[in-house]
Image 1 (cartoon, rainbow, N blue to C red):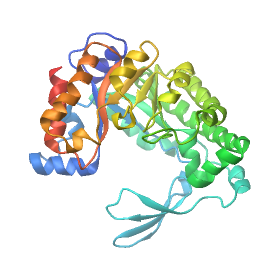
Image 2: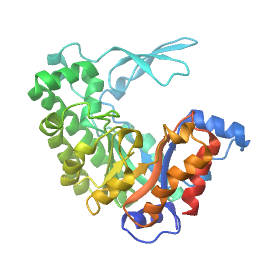
Image 3: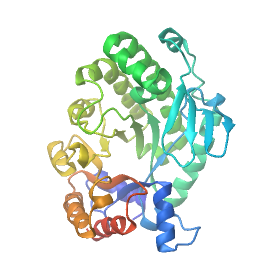
Length: 352
């Protein structure tokens, strides 16, 4: 089976030749893997391990046309990003400092005019990704961000959380405005992807929780964000998306019933450290939701022994093999993951 066939069969509850799996390899891990395994420079790590799903990303930033590097020094870069933010970045660091937002006040933020979501330049890199997806016969989901996280990029995280608490009507206005933009990007991505993408689906990535709870109350989520979420899901499915994938780190168990109700099909990454037990959740929501992920990429995979990795992975792989609505994976594979531990996980998946 090709990766595409394998994923489609698994989602339909049909037999597969092996378990499909999904990971994203971060640069630090790739460097570690190349050094420890002495692999040729041209060998692609995703192809080597047979990762079955790829995420196809257009340029969705609302001010991407003005993105630019403003100052570059040996260890520091100042740039304006695709969301209009002024950022200071340190060489070798994953994080950055936000120096300024695109608007100084709430009124200015509400009045901002976003770049055209249909501009062809947004999809140049996406078209290249489509070609690679087609050539490698992968299961490709097109990607957008979500109204919560993307609005914090424009308004500011602290400012937007204060808006949600103090002025929910204003917060809803900004969320709906962002949802309109994201819908246009998603629908155009599906159109350009044709059957290659439409028969797989669309994904929305909106980190709205941390390990212990949501970042906002369920009531605020339902009042401010759920209507926009519902419009995004509906628009993607009307544009041909077979499956709709929702990603949020953290504990989102409180949101799963309403996400299922609006038509979300797949939940990712299902983090164990946040209390998200993928086997238990797959059984609880059988027939309503399926789950992509479930392996602990920040605990046992990083610090455990190979035996501990094997013991952690085996029950998830067994449930996936039984057709319980799981595509196994660990989301991002970071630089702190020992290569031997990733390969132990991979061996269990391949043998299941």
